[in-house]
Amino acid sequence: MKEERDIEIDYSTQEFVAKLRRLADALECGDKFEIQIANERIYVPVRAKYNIEHERSDSEEEIEFQIKWSRD
Image 1 (cartoon, helix red, strand yellow):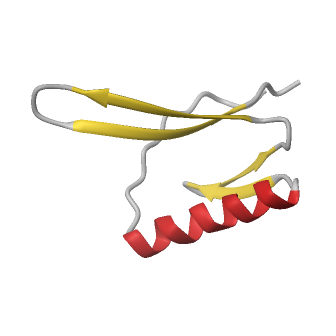
Image 2: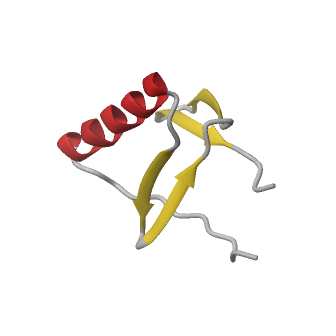
């Protein structure tokens, strides 16, 4: 069993665009998506669910692009 993680990494605009582009290409082709985060390679299966979350407080706003799947 893999250990729990909760990591947040900042990327430059260029790096973020490249990751989004690779994700979009995988989705369009119906392929799994692979990404390395903090030295761990993550394999996102085709069956993953995608959602967008928006949060707002008095001082800031946040949009999260989320990808979720079960490991079974």
